[in-house]
Length: 261
Image (cartoon, rainbow, N blue to C red; front, top):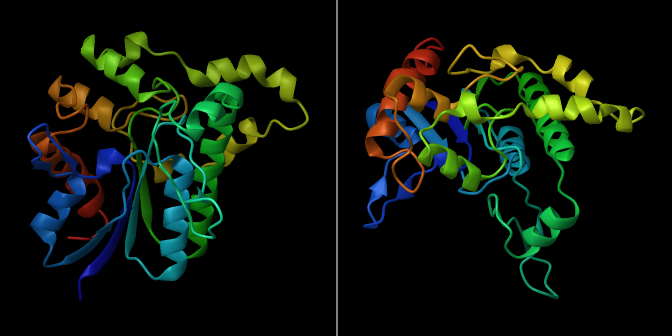
């Protein structure tokens, strides 16, 4: 019987299309291609998905059925989405993952309600919730990230600008948690961030570098560190980059050590 693996993330784990409308395989696609005879891989990654949506997708699938392994790819901390009515006067509700932009309802949210503090605390709560859920269901898992969650620029546009300038993440990024520390005296009665940071099990993350704040590097740092390269297909991994990430990182560090292949 094939082992069942669930993968959930944002567009960095979902195949994308290049400018000529050709499909660029993602690393989960390569997992299916190479080990489809022994692995059943369900990839529910959604372009533009927030970490809240990633959490809710995994929650449903883990409570719905058994998985031999779950791989979670967390996205940038700034993304926001909410289940809204598809049309007026209808009960049909769906998510509208829009990534990091100022379109539609997102414009009002980012203009009036978004804050770095809120983005950090939401991210930490999502991580802790999923860790506790997966462990309560006895479901083995690994968490990876799009990049270092707390030094990465907070919008995809900033990431694009950064990569255009050479990909020097460590030299050009600010530590988001340091900004939060300067704000914490304002939230003395409700500030749970220090406790969440201590409660999260970082051993369940597979980072791509040894830098901690407390998070380490993700897919973007891996590409720059190992290949001195930048995402080449609409600012995402192209066909070859996705294969290299699968073959040099996912396979030897997740699949083989956990007896999945």
